[in-house]
Length: 491
Ligand code: FAD
Image 1 (cartoon, protein in one colour):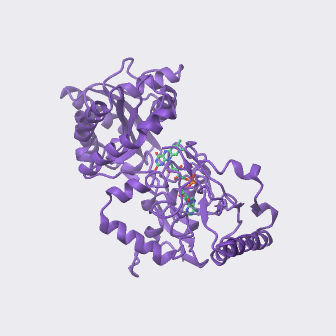
Image 2 (cartoon, rainbow, N blue to C red):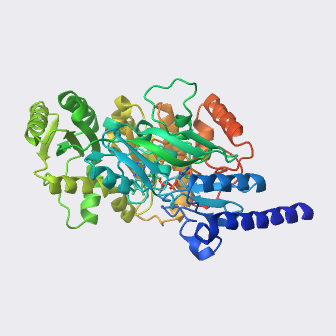
Image 3 (cartoon, helix red, strand yellow):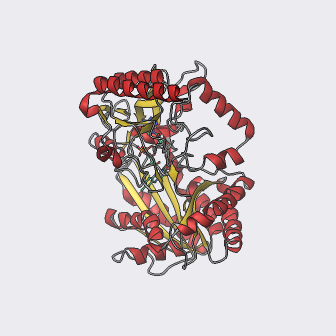
């Protein structure tokens, strides 16, 4: 036993010596102060330990480092902006893994308006890509609240969504080509963007959404679209969530491809944001039981036509008694103010006290009935709580929060009730044919629930793929699939 652990420790020391030679002082540190910020996840729920923070500067360095890790059996936790919501980028508390940060690989190699493509390294921050595309009159059509931190590699690894999925899809629809380093250090080069390619399995899609468990994304070729010239944003007051779905279908018919966003905000959330942001104003002057935020864009700068079409659709909905009131933003500033209300919900809810948050989806058609069934079910099972749902109705994806009773103490309440509440939410979602993770991935947060509720055949295929590509379980162990290790965590 002693011999084994001293051999392990010698091997770890040897790994550190070789890694230092490979990456140099900028590329490797084991200084606790320099590592500290990267050992806790964005939400502050998980904290781990690592033997080093490695920051390679090129695909060749990533490949050499991964080969070294394979040789010395050093687990690897890939990390981009560390803004993920499921603890996927946080190491366990054994201190045996390295964090492999892609942040130094932040070059945008090309932006081509003609080809409608950008070629980026994995560490490019989403907002930086937006700006580079805009400078060429183009647009990368995926955005989300964490755009100032989230990297292309992290967005690919989590198959991120955001507020334009309704029209443009998740990362799966944006990635035209991809480069990744596999567990043995080989480089998978799928960068050539082919519109048609039937050479067997789509390995690019296998890597997307694999949360760093099958390979390390080092670069990607991404789809760009011409920047929209016109934009019309509306805030609508409705009596109910069923009406919101009917309105969604009517607006889809009226606006066609112009419709990009359809978000729902219940009165409770709007009131919370208004209380949290003293300068904010309710767009309709009063709170409605449900509100919808609708955004349409067009390639033409003739905003008048887009606006008229949306106005006509909303007027018809008003005549039908489907909606109570509506306002169309007069300019970009007002449109941004509407979005600030939507984007401010998480912070406002957090300020109100503890809550269990769930990022779930069910088929779009069933979402209103799901919400109407799930809210009272949770509130009666856990007296004193309040359940709310808001977000991407157009994608069949809402954030379903169960808010603690007013007297609850943060930390203690989640510890005591969190797992039971989440299990009940996920049981309901599964019974309604939905997913326990619509956008944020599984990370370490939902490993047990995925194992409990996902189709056994699907789990077996996932485990077989993992074994085939990473037989020593060195790539992000304990994340996504059941396996050894979990960091010191909250609920
Ligand atoms: P990290 O957090 O560093 O890592 C996330 C996962 O990807 C980990 O498992 C990690 O190991 C892995 N990983 C990271 N880089 C690589 C790589 N190069 N190769 C292989 N694996 C890698 N998400 C949505 O889908 N929709 C939203 O609307 C949304 N809103 C958000 C709002 C806010 C304010 C924030 C903070 C986040 C939001 N997110 C949303 C979460 C978003 O998915 C993540 O922020 C993003 O996808 C993760 O990118 P990252 O670079 O920070 O990755």
